Every structure is written in structure tokens, then in C-alpha cells.
Image 1 (cartoon, one colour):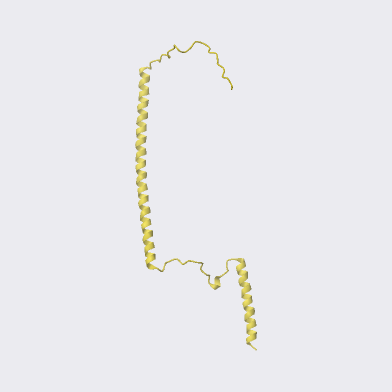
Image 2 (cartoon, helix red, strand yellow; image 1 turned 120 degrees about the vertical axis):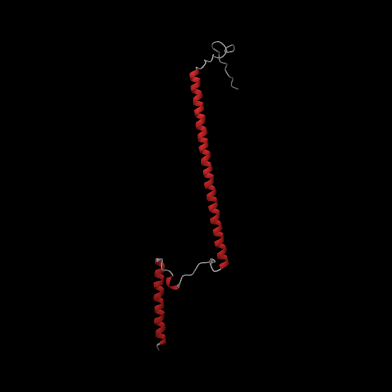
Length: 134
């Protein structure tokens, strides 16, 4: 285990010494500090008052927003009830099939397939027509 080395004390011991005498502040300086303190206190009070007013305004705004939201929610619920009563406005589930004429028009592949399909139909009609003639 490592031993701690004792350091040699230099000079006199501080045991019998009392602290340094504090110098009395001048009247002018005391007044100046007092005024500064009062000024700071007044400023803090004013700021606190302004903050309280801001908080009150924010509370009012929040209340208004809350009321507005509740009214909108009620309106939405009323609309839903009306839709339910009507019955005809209910959403249809599942994928809606496209009309035959508009199917596959958006993609290049779809257009090509339509073209091939149309050609096949024409060939079938031609073959069918030839069979019907004789």
C-alpha cells in the first residue's frame, strides 16, 4: 500500500488568527446599492406582471381553439350520422373494375397488350366470317 507523505508546514499556524477586519461601507455606496436593488425588484415585478398577462392571453386563445375543435368535431359527427341515415353514401369496399374501354390505357405495356388483343379479335372475326360465308 502506498503511504501518504506528510508535508512540512511553513510559516505560523493560523489557529490563533481572527479574520481580517471588514471595512465599513460609505453611506453613499450603501444608498447606491439599495437603489439598484429596488430598481431590479421593480423590474422583476413588472416583467412578472407582463408574463402573467401573456399567460392569461395564451389561456384564452387555447380555450378558443379548444372550443373551435369541439365544434368542428360535433359537425363531423352530425355529418356522419346523416350519411348513416341516408345509407346510399356508404363506401364500397374492394377494387373497382375499370370500364372495358379504359382498361390498361395508362401504361405502355397495357397499351401494347390492348393492341395485340385488338389484332387477335380482328383475326378471329376474319376467320369467323370466312367460316360463315360458305
